[in-house]
Amino acid sequence: MSNPVKIVGPESPTPAKIAPPSQAVYANVSRLFATPNEVVMDFALNLNAFGPMVEEEAQIVSRVVTSYDGAKRLWVHLTQTLQAYEQKYGVIELDVAKRLKKPDADPAS
Image 1: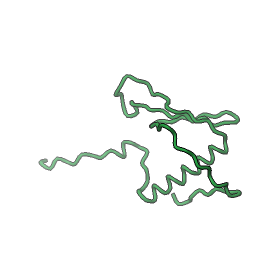
Image 2: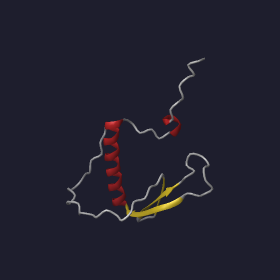
Image 3: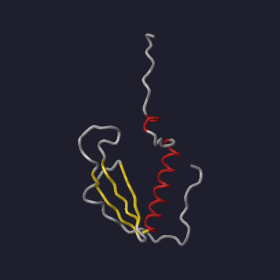
Image 4: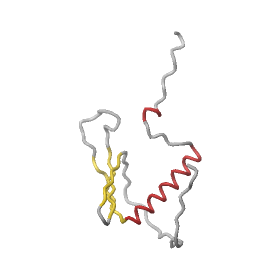
């Protein structure tokens, strides 16, 4: 990823100090949909993401609704964060099959 994203336009005001939430949630699945005025992001926990493990449907753990400019700012920050991570640690592989380690060949054969 060689083209870093830059925010264009007037400098943003100093960010407000925000207290951390009382609890954090983990999600391994997300979905987005949009209205003419907002972007809606659902974050869910799917325990069966890699095959049937439990008889339980994915559960939405958080829903975030934001404006389009808020969504674009999120996109910019996520892009910058992922670019920095990949520069330091390498490309993030999205295909789980490619991330799996293959067992070593049997030395006895």
